[in-house]
Length: 469
Image (cartoon, rainbow, N blue to C red; front, side, top):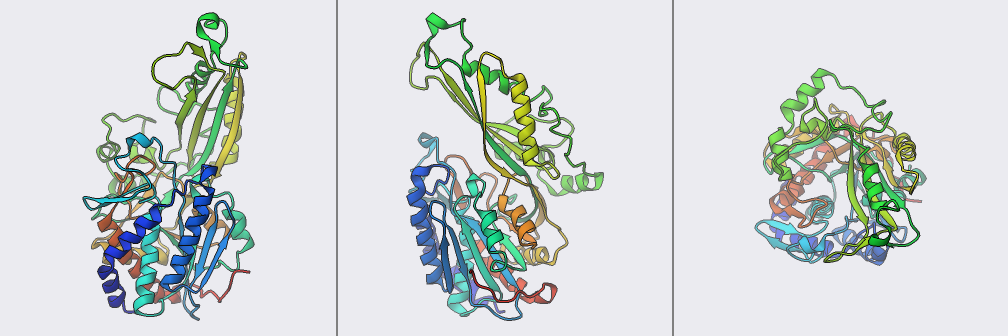
C-alpha cells in the first residue's frame, strides 16, 4: 500500500498530535493508587472516543477500576492481523517537589514534552494511534487488519490481562503483536528489543512494639524495627554485588561466548550506561559488563524504605514498624513463584527473634525472548530504516513488560518490540519526558511497519475475522 499520503498527513498534523498527547497525559492514571480509579475510567473513555474518531469501527471498554480498551478495524480478508498493545497507566509521580512543572500538566520545552506518562507509555503508544489515523484519514483503509489492546494496569503487573486474553483468545487472535514501551540508544540509533527480564515485586514489613516508643526511655532495651529491617536488607547481597539468597542463581541460564560477543558489539558500553545514569561509579556482579548485568543477569533492588519520623528536625522515637519495597528482575528459566518462596525462606531464617516480618507479593512477571529471525522483525527493521533513516540494532532490555510473555504463551504469536524512548527520558523518575522528533519518527515508523506487514502476508497465516464475544 502507498505510504505517501499517510506520511504527508502525519507531517502536516504534528502540532495537532502533540496537543492531543498533552490532553492524554493530563489524566493522572496512577494504577498503584486506588484514589485514581476515577481518573483511569475517564482516561479509558477518552481513549475509546479518540479511537472511534480516527476511524476504528469496533470499540469496547472492559472492566472498571483499570479498564481495558479494545478497538478493531474493518476486517480485510487474506490480510494479516496486527495486534497493537500499549498501556495508559503510569507510575506515581513522587517525589513531586523534584518536578520542574506539575507532572500532569504537560509542557513542551526544547523539543521535549514533559509529564508523567509522556514516554512510558502514553507517548510511545500514541505513535501507533496516530499512524492508524494517518492511514484512515487519507486512504480510508489500512494495509492490514488491526486490533488495539490498551490496558490500565501494566505498572502493577497486569493481573487482569492474562485472564482476559484467555477468555477472548479467539477474538484477539492475530499474526503478530507490536508494542512500543522501551528505549533505543539514541535519536539516530533505533533498536529492536529481543529480550526482557521478568519481575517480582514485594513489600517487606517489620513490626516491633505495639506503638512508637520514647527513644530515651526504651533505647537499648527494645529492637528498633527500622534497624532490624536494615539488618535484613544487608543480608540480601554479598560484598561482590551478587544476590545472597540461597538458590537464587540455580536456574539462571548460561549464555555462550557467541551471544556475549554479539552483545559486546551491539550494546552500550559501561561508560554510556553510567552517563545515562548520571553516575560515576559502577556497582554490581563481577565478571560482567554493565549491559550484561542489566540484561543477562538477574538483580534485586530496594525501591524504597519507610519507617519512623520523616518530618523536619528530630524526634526521639523508636518506631513500631518499618517497610521496604523490593523488586527482582529475573532472567530466562527463573520462576518468579520459586524466587518468591526462596526470599520468604531467607527472611524467615535471618529475621531477628525480637521483631516480626511480613512479606506481601505485589506482582509477578515472566521474562521473554523473541526470535530475531522472524519475518515480523524483518518488517520492523525495514520500518525503522524508513522512519529513522538508519538500520536498527537488536538489543536486550533489562526492563519488564508482563504482556510480552503472556502474548507469546496465550496467543502463540511473535511480539515486535519497537521502542522510541531515549535512555535519558527519566522514565519512572521526576521530569519524565519524550523527545518529539522520536515521537514524529515513531509515527512514520509505525506507518511503514503496517505497510511492510501487509506486504508480507504470504509469510504469515491469515487470521479469520473474529469479534469480541
